[in-house]
View 1 (spheres, rainbow, N blue to C red):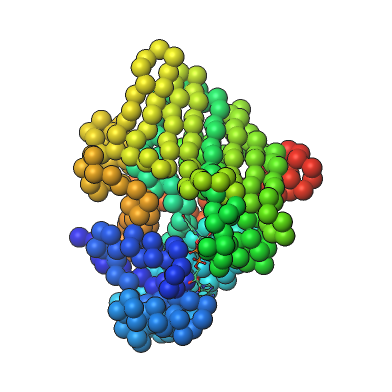
View 2: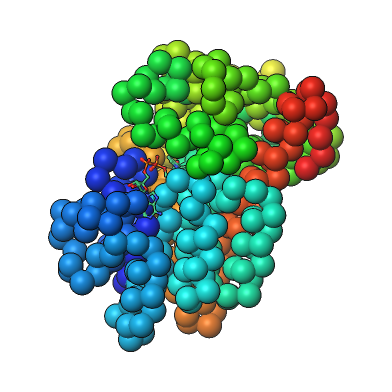
Length: 384
Ligand code: NAI
């Protein structure tokens, strides 16, 4: 029996993108109840969103500070257990800090903070608080990404030589005018941080490469561009080195006309290579010089036999596709099971702990910082 955990949210107001995905994903398995929120930068709109969601008006707040103070004052058992932060980047640190210091577990959007210093400070706050902190790097929640990690770990690919990870989007090239609010805060350093494209999607790609290979990126050489003037980077090409002498290339772009969300990764070993593509996420292709191409399909017993993580993070039988919201739901399942394990005074299992943590957030900020420094210094190698 899983205790039903109570969820609060900051951000995710009417028309916002990612908050509604969090709400659907967290509740997918029926073990989370959404009961409170400060949903919008405009207090009246926050209350309106709460009304639309059918929440008790007494639990709909005008600001995050109000919510944290009021929920903290409620008796244990009534107050929220965790708070999901779904606001623009510049607000993550202060809201996460306030939540943790008030005793709430936190699920936070990426990039985790605005700077490396803030990220390190948040890691200390998490440790001191004893609360559980999750970071929503979506793509490691996909079961076939978990299989990819386990294929690499088991040595099926042999020695890893090279990683190519590409995250092409096109919406900031031409479509941004149809989504002006989302484009405005992402391209403005005051709300986005030191990077747009690398913070928004480059960090997802770097996190994916590190998760699948189990290796850290140690240095980068980056070339960033602004195809549309007067804003932060909207495109970037990064060469990187990883531990164990692995080399790689990371392309993240938001001006690739016609591209939607084409994240893909190739991992090349000396025996075999694999590819996962986010827009067809239920399969992994494995190729070699000696055997015909293999296609591993989500939900099959041969996947479960190879990867307990891929087996655990699946809800529907093979042939019934799962995708983005399920990947979010997997992170929520593991995050909330870790909270329950801590409550039961039990050490969470490796499978329960399989969600991005504050340490991934620190790495993400170091990646962004090194990439921006490399580009600024005239495309030189910068250590992470
Ligand atoms: P958005 O612009 O669609 O929505 C932001 C929402 O936050 C709005 O409702 C706004 O009113 C609200 N808000 C802003 N400041 C607030 C405050 N101080 N208190 C309460 N509400 C506040 O932005 P979007 O696309 O939903 O992005 C939000 C965050 O999620 C960003 O950090 C972004 O990087 C991340 N993100 C992550 C994705 C993933 O796959 N993990 C995908 C898209 C976004």
